[in-house]
Amino acid sequence: MRSYRLGYFSDLLILSANCFLVCLLAWVSIPAVHAEDTACEATGATHIWVSPLNPKIDEPFKIMAVSTDGPASELVLIDSQDQRMSLQSQRRGGPPWSLIAVLEKLNEGRYRIEANRNGKLIACHTLTLGGSDQQERLRAWNLATEAFYSAWIEALFGAPPEENLSFNSLEPFLRNVERNFLHNYLGINEDNNLPLTPDCADLPYTLRAYFAWKTGLPIAFRACGRGSAKAPPYCGTPTIITEFTRGISSQANFKKFSRRLVDTVHSGSARTGLADESTDLYPISLSRKTLWPGTVYADPYGHILVLVEWVPQTADRPGMLLAVDAQPDNSVARKQIWEGTLLFANTENAGPGFKAFRPLISTSPGKWRILANDELIDHPEFTTFSLEQDYLTPDDFYATLANLINPSGLDPVQVYEATLTALVEQIETRVNSVNNGEAYFRKNPRSVISMPSGAAIFQTLGPWEDYSTPSRDMRLIIAINVLNGLPEKIVRHPELFVLKDKNPEEAKAKIEQYHTKRIQEQSIRYTRTDGSSWELSVAEVLARKPAYEMAYNPNDCAEIRWGAKPDTEEYATCRRYAPAEQRAKMEQYRVWFREVRRPMQ
Image (tube, rainbow, N blue to C red; front, top):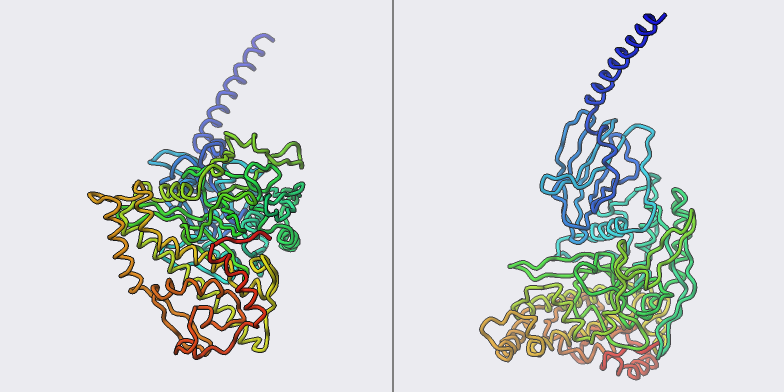
């Protein structure tokens, strides 16, 4: 009996050893794409995202690697046979940095995507095509998801800096498969005929809501007042939408939510006091590390922009900070950030400046709350709350921003050319706005658009909001003042310029002479009432600045709106005039534009 037991255990040990060797050999032979799955948990500073959420066999899909600690240098795809393929990628940003690659199709199987930095693995992601595995959507707002949101914004509005990027609404951006990384992300054709036409105040909220819908995150917003002459807007309790976190939500559900959102938010939602905690947005510091694409800028008078890209300064080209905004006619355009587009003022009735969306955190399954200001100080996952902007004068604010955009300083001529280019861009955008009004009257030749009274001319509903340009014209007047005032700025802030061997007064005199020459060389064209084109030099546009104090009424012909004088050839084609009572109102409000002082509503 004893010898039998010994033989039995001896055979069992041999069998176990053989099984172990077989298993070991099998494990060794497993391709890397399987053996290293456990190493692909996203815990570092780089994360990889795939769109659509669950790619299909033989259909295109996109890959985006987003880093918060430096750029990735390469994206690599590894198949089930351990074949490696370096992917052609488009680089963006910093910070956050992104690499985006597009694959036309892949066969059924299991794949591994790697992001590398200088030959070292910094992130990976496994993907199965044709199986039952489903990719998980996002679970929480955190540093990684905020970076993803930022990179998505930058890609959505990406284009060469010199390109004039403008559409009649947000829809062409979102429906563009190449631009929109999240296009059909849910795989239910949810972007087909999706109507999204936000105006100025709605734009940042709509972008945030769209991202949350696609990725499965909660979103919050508040009903706010518009403030008073001595107090900024105040908001009520937040509405927290968690529906997107509970599974894929249909286009119909998102449309319903979107309508509710745009019916609630307005320009006062972003102009809340900087120290207030009952807000959708909170102020952040002025730093290259904090002003990510997706950051919101709220000016003291109600206009809102969304940062989309930093263009770094090089030896051959000044740096640029680009943003998008929406107009009352729902058009969306990208533009340079400068003093003419970014209004900043110390005022007791608004909290202007750069702001981030106040984050939500989970407290228990299905329950979320919004972080307070003190919780956002040095939070590891979110941009730090800061009151830095509250203590800056407008001059200091613009100087700080200019130093961030061009940290090496600029030759005064470079600064002048960049400012002139931005002004011309602003004038050409106004050309489109005036043309939109002319198109309306061609369709409605006997119409007279009602003009609101008082401060309501800047913010109302209907055709006046769509086709009048009081806010745009006030910004144009400010932009003209900035260009004309550049020589004095050289003397006031010489630290922003590379003056070489010149003193500030010498540099000022040189730019004054250069200014006189360049505004004669640059020109724009607008369309007159009869459809003919009329050219104006920039010098003529600048000389007509007083006319723009009363040029925003769409009931006036295009010639009047561009400052043409009666009894001139340019004016001869005018056939439409604002009613006398409207002109009387405009004369009364003219001081607002002369003093570039927008009244409180």
